[in-house]
Length: 404
Image 1 (cartoon, rainbow, N blue to C red):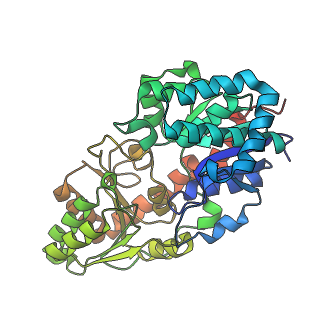
Image 2 (tube, rainbow, N blue to C red):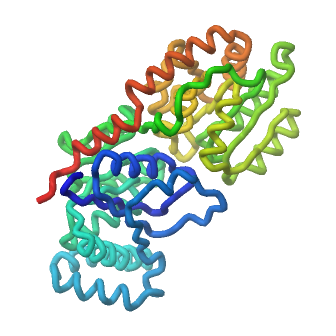
């Protein structure tokens, strides 16, 4: 058991679409870390992953609306001013100029975070996403709280609304910044440099939870995707590719299953109906149910794109899950995906925004099951060697500073 105490700062926890965060926490505990989770809010989601119950760490919820918890905030403020008044005032000046309501809310949340971390005797704090969580960790540090680090993912570094000066304010003082792919690390390096304090801790999957690769090849014609239904997932291209495929004799029995929810759900369903695609939109599912869907699929497809906003995926967990479970994968060469899906070796890559190429790749895997099996076997080995959660967690642990 490690002597240090690590705090995790998150905007929401536990979140259905962020299995990688809960999995990482559980694995860190397995490897001996003592953790406390600090989250701004609970997601308002009807579905919850059962495996999250394995986490033993306490979860402390910060005040989402600080003025509704005046006593808690006031006590934290008094202790912050007694502990490091100059630090708190520096943080306040940064938050409150120019005056804005969001700045006041973040200041008060960070004040409570600093207080809660002191009470939990946190030695180091780690934030997921270079957005609100990183800002709170940064403010608490300015107030005299512990040093911090950040894992940056995708939207938090690629979106057109990301301002480099704000990103620098949050990440420059961090002990280290981890990217989930080499592509993400290179992008951050081009923006900030950070003097060698950039590391790659790959997005990864828990092979113990997933179990061995499946022994059968899936149901003929069943194409699966698991994603938030947003632009960067490229699902309009997938629906169009399936429409093209259904016109070909080799894919007459094709069926598309879409797991997940998001703002494009109604639009994607309407497109599937208009194009005559045999599609089922299953909505959000717990991971235990998603694993059952992987085992039935003949092909897994996630044709990610760079969205109009500049947003893109870092390295989607669902692609790694499919690879680990022996489902042949078709995806695009966007961001970190080519690091996992090596074209012709561990899956098939096609250009983004190209439904014709996507249809051809899916058809190839549906009709050439020898190829599909060969790619799947190599994909499992690739995940074991580079994207196993046990390895990524150990790499992250090595970056955390020892207790003072």
